[in-house]
Structure formats: C-alpha cells, structure tokens
Amino acid sequence: MGISKFWLLAAGGTAALTGMVTAAAGDDADPRPGHAMAPQAIYDTDDRTLIGEAPAEAQELARSVVALVPTTDLQRVGDNYKVWGLTHGEDLGLCTGVAFSDIQSAADCSGVLIGPDLMLTAGHCVPDMVQCQAYNYVLGFEVTDRNPENVVSADQVYSCAGIAHAGGDVLDFTVVRLDRPVTDRPPIALETGPLNGGAPITMIGHPSGLPQVLTDNAQVLAVRPDAYLTNLDAFGGNSGSPVFSAAGRVAGILVSGQSDFEEIQAAGRRCTKPVYYRCDGPRCEGGGEVVVRSDRIGQVSGLLPPNQPVAERP
Image (cartoon, rainbow, N blue to C red; front, side):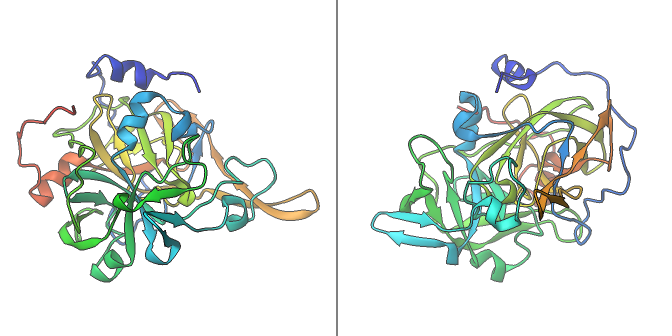
C-alpha cells in the first residue's frame, strides 16, 4: 500500500482543511441507538490493509485499539492467551479470492483506549453489564511477522470492571472501565470540535472480527450535529472502531452503515462476496458509513467539557 494523503498530512501535523459539506449523503443512515446496523461496505476500492503492512504512524495508533473478544474464544496457555475462531472464509462462506479469507476472525466489536483504564466503543456493542462482562478487551490482536498465530500476552487481556459512561438514547457509545490501568501504551485524545467536510480520515479496527486492519483513503462526506457520514470501508466487527483525524486524535467511532455481503453463484457453488458502492464526490451509493463524533461523546459523557484543551499524543 502506498502512503495516502492522510499519512502525508499526519506527518506534517494538523491538516489545513476548508469547505464544510452540508448536503446529507443518504438520510437513511441513522446513527441513533436502536437504529444502528452493523457497519458493512466497500466504497469504490477496498482500502483495507493488515496493520502489520501499514505505515509506522498507523501501527503506533493501533497499539491503543482494542478487540472485544468473547471470553469463550480465549484460552490461557502459560503467560499467553490463544485466540480461537474460524477463518474469515469459513465463517461467512466467502467466494474464492475474497480478501483475508484465510485469516482467523474472533472479535465481535472494536474499541479504543481513551484513558488509562477507559475504553470507548459503540453502545450497541456493550449495552449493559451482562454484555460488558461477556467480553475480554484485548490489545494487540494482530497478525504480523512477529505474531502469525494470534497469540496475545496475558497482560494485554483485560476484563470489564464497570460501565463508566453510556450514551443511552442520545448517542450510540459506551465507555467501559477496565479491571486495571493500561501502563504500556498511551490513551488517545478525543477531538474537541468537528472536522470539516472533506477532511481525510482513517480507521483501525476489526472488520468481520479479523485481527487489526487499517482502513485508509477515506474522508468526511457530510457533517451532522452528532455524526459524520463517511466513505470508510467497514464491516461488522468495525462497530466501535476509532476513526482518526490527520492530527492522530479520535474523531469518532463507527456505529452503522450499509449491507456488506451478497450471495452469488460461482464455480458451481453458492458463496458470498463484498458489496461495492460507488462514490461521486461527497455522495455515495447507500449513503455512507456513520461515525458518531467524539466531541459530542466527550460532551455527553462529561469526559470532554466544552473548550477543554487537547493533550498532544507523545
């Protein structure tokens, strides 16, 4: 993968972006709780890359991205945990040649570390304490040359100590309090204000439950009071994935989107393949993927009072 406009901007600090997009690109995409559906779609081309093949800046951000893995899918082996699950292809009956078919999938949702013991995710992923305690919160669920077998150290696996904040009927988010502070990597600051329309964005998470994947070459299509419409390539499992601004801050979390797979007849069998949507400027077929704005999450939760200065990432 080449270096996109996003990473060139990120390397230079905050992007200078102008031109607010006010046209609603598909009003059928509804980010309200109870209306969210799994975010699932590819726009124009598939811009997803395993994090081990991503730029160094993305790999650094990914250290603070969390996989929500059912407790039943982790097995303790000495000082490590083995992550169990079907391959992506087995799980969904994918057609031959579909990306990531041979890679194991295990995560139900994604999240991001925003405090030493606080993890932000989508509200529909963790609606209550029962679901909160049904997950382990795993840092470093990735496939790299150093970790081809999906083994994670026990000190990278956390559990739910409680729900610190929830969006309720206002916004689709939950802040989980982990059972202990994370001490070996920094939390990521929230953006304190809205991005402009056309702003470049990127996302790191667990599409279809896969190990960490970078989604690049995307932008804000439209700005709404509580959310952005975007052309991020997203799938079920990306719910709660952090969406990053060019400054390396959390601009929001993914909460809903369009249908991702369709069943076809190929090579004498029924199989599934991703659905591709075309974009024309700020408008995309199906409307786009919905990202709840982090500045609104911060205000609703009290984590981010208005006009609070943003701490720079080390």
